[in-house]
Length: 217
View: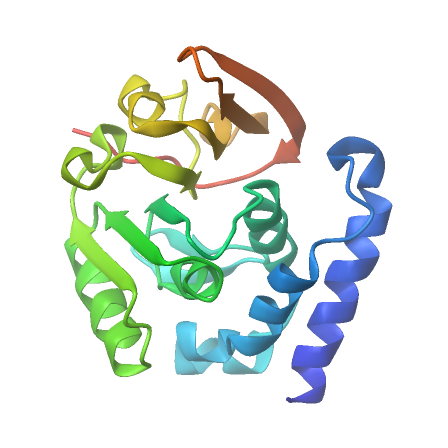
């Protein structure tokens, strides 16, 4: 593992401790951190940004989209409390980095991307790199992927003005969704949604974040 990659993992650990009063987690699970160690972030950024691939910050990936900050990827993944038999839906494939992380933790990852060029490039990249338990589709994330539901977990990597009802409906009882909620380029909160056995949901605001907007029709 490169020194820069090791440094990134240490920075994630430090930030987890620093934000523990908001997240309730002083550190992330060993499974999540192993996945963060296993996936080479440099493979999911353009050649121009390779020197900054392991910086603990977002990077542009084109089409006004970004690859998320490693700490945020780790936090959102950890909040889902995933087990190896889980099936997960990701909204906002982007470069494919979050899907690659999830693939190391669950049985199956379904991922949706509204921008066709990103959906195509990420799908090819994930297949070429051997992430065979990831299935990608170019589609509107607000509608989810009803044919593949229900899901044990859903992670949304763009901010929505409200929690999409279709995603709540596609979440299994006992399942969790992590989603940024708020107006684009304004105050946003990372929200944890837990679906109860009776179909109701509990929501918990975790911390302030900043994401690109979730694109819909």
